[in-house]
Amino acid sequence: AFLHGLTRYTGAQRILEVGTGYGISGLYLARGLLENFPVRTCLLITLEQESDRASYARNNFQRLGLKDITDVRAGDVTATLEAALKDIAPLNIAFIDGPRDEDTILRCVSQIKRRARPGTFIILTGIHSAPGAGHPRRAVQHMPQIAATVDLWQWGLVLVGHGPALHLCARL
Image 1: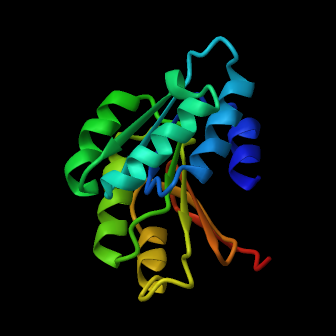
Image 2 (image 1 turned 60 degrees about the vertical axis):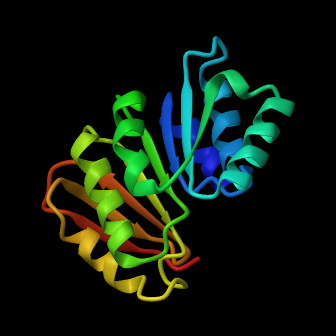
Image 3 (image 1 turned 180 degrees about the vertical axis):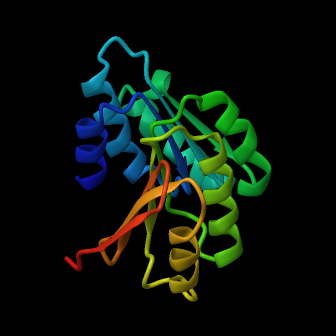
């Protein structure tokens, strides 16, 4: 519901999801896109490392009539992210839900941030529950081109823009 609400509130038209899983989060994102742009000028590109999960998610999107606004791509995130960023531009929201290791998270955020414009949201999940997750969260706060970060305990919001960054913590 949070993802759907953020999509609606921001008026997002182009979203990138890193870590599709079975497509549940993507369904909320896609519904928000459709409610913002019912003429289907919107796009959700979602990346999944495991081909079985990607196939399952693709079927879910198709069954719910969301196939024409979603693009599920299977493969290693580090290999598929740059092409996805080129295809999704201009990006409004990036949702990083798959990678849990510090290096991959930081690489994803850096790549996304380089291609994002001011006002783009990057959402991170499990920022306190994943092993070593406190470190990438702190590193992201000090990256250039970050306007603000919000720590919602399980969710981290990053707003791309010009610093110095404002850092907020609201443990829900």
